[in-house]
Length: 529
Image (cartoon, rainbow, N blue to C red; front, side, top):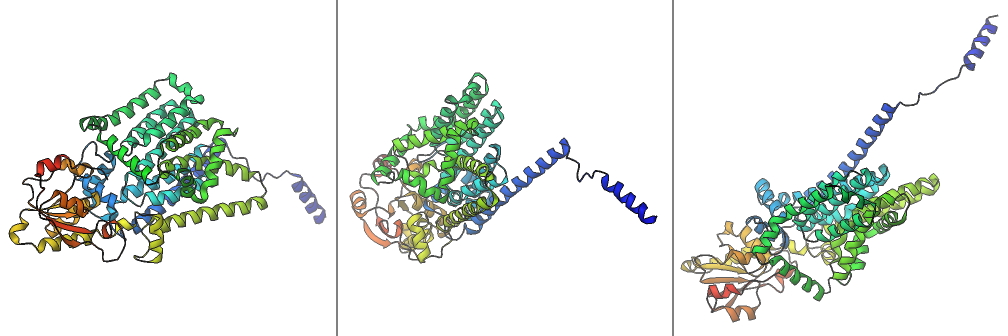
């Protein structure tokens, strides 16, 4: 009987329907989504923080780059403009000097930090386009190689890159939300970008084309685009006024620079450079461009395609350098990652697994390759350093500046004591000026003077020097313009690295004052480099 009772209870129990889990409520789903988003963002920040750490660990291995020495010198003479570039990079240089002194790691910190932020922005753009965690991580990883290279130096290219990406981020937000108030940060990003590098103007042309040629033009009937434009103009106005006061010297410099680049063949490989510099991530940005141009899912993001196509056409027609367009690829990486994630989701696990493996391998190889060439990692001198220097000439220009200053100090010490009081140092290029004015004071050297770029505006000193150490100029120029010249020393570097300062600019002369007098000589001495 007991057995019959147990069987009856068991049968009744088994007949009761079992509910494994209650479906999550709306609030639970929102909490889960928020938690997932936070975790995704944390992953992006972790990757970006890793690149920042790599930059900081590698930053002090060599020395200041030639261009960095120019920014360092201009950072001591803050203005709303300079002959060679807008004012933003020297401003950050001044901030670095204030916070960190002349520390090389400190000087490069803000550049590396901004590049880390661009990695987060790239992944975030993928999220705003509808991408999940995989798309966000792939997009972020694709942006790492160029970010590593451009963030290795304190340079206007780094700030230019950042503001292109920031502008694209806000445009994506605008397209996703349909909130025209995003035109305000778009305008601010463009204005600040113009204060970093004038090529931002071409990206702004792409943004404008994207607005006019897609459904985004509906926002022109609101006040927000016009307020964004006003913000841009207000930010750029002080630099424009400076250019007016200096007879648009920035235009003269850009004309010189473009003519030089074309003459030296630096613009001939523009199209090939687009694939060389995007490395194994090229299929990703091509997919992203197709996604924005023609995919049904990408209809809302058609404007992003114009933000790439218009600058591409301008640089191609105007013969720009290949790296000018690199910031425009981040938004295409994001779009391509979203498209790829959706395409792979349609495949079986067995089909998708090798594709994911190939993507991860390609992105890893690209990042490691970029680090090997773009960062100051190779021992000096070594076969690795020489190979990296062929692809990245900036590495060679980080070597030997203290050796130059030591040579100049030894030459000064060889002069009679009474001659040293009237001594000046005339340097040919901005790297020499920056190095002498950075390392020279501790050796008791006078500040360098030069006619290069904005150094010309700072004059030749009062009283004018009567004995000159002339650095970097060819013998013919020196003998034609100065009294009593003789070759007094030759520059080299203790590591035996072959660069400009140890080859074509190695001769150091000791001379008297200009033959025509300082005032007349200086009047026609301004030049660009």
